Length: 219
Image (cartoon, rainbow, N blue to C red):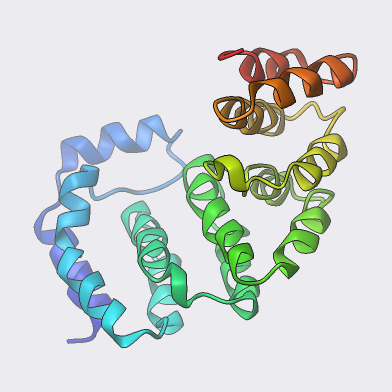
């Protein structure tokens, strides 16, 4: 049996229809679920991911099949797989990852993929210019990736890039953009509150109230 069908068999064997209904409702019935809680889901493929890491090669055929599946747990598996294989990802893999960004879009997968793309910058600085380009994309989910791709970097945050990306997204009426702006600033405020405070003071007349509120939470 191939890897995709092995995973599918395990997911189906552990499905919980009651949870599946609740999870689908929480996600506005945009996706079908097996009803697997996160710890259970991850335990199913923990050994599998460990074995994949020893191969040091991303199985894109497997990931494509998983992401084409209607069940959301398969999409989560793809993200966990890419996190596990992060050090083997290169700039040349970004177009492939972007296919996932553009497919089955909702905040949960977008927020799982943002740092997967962003962390490639630690090995290839071309990501910086790409994120600047993505920050003006017609697809607001792609822009959200750009806005949040530096989350949790702390002292390694490229503040010049962050500022340019955020400014590019001022004036948006999209909730998920204004929330992302606030989140990125709130996260960095834990490391450099003065920078965030000055940023908000400088741009407060151009920022959405939601962004300001989120950014100021820890100031």
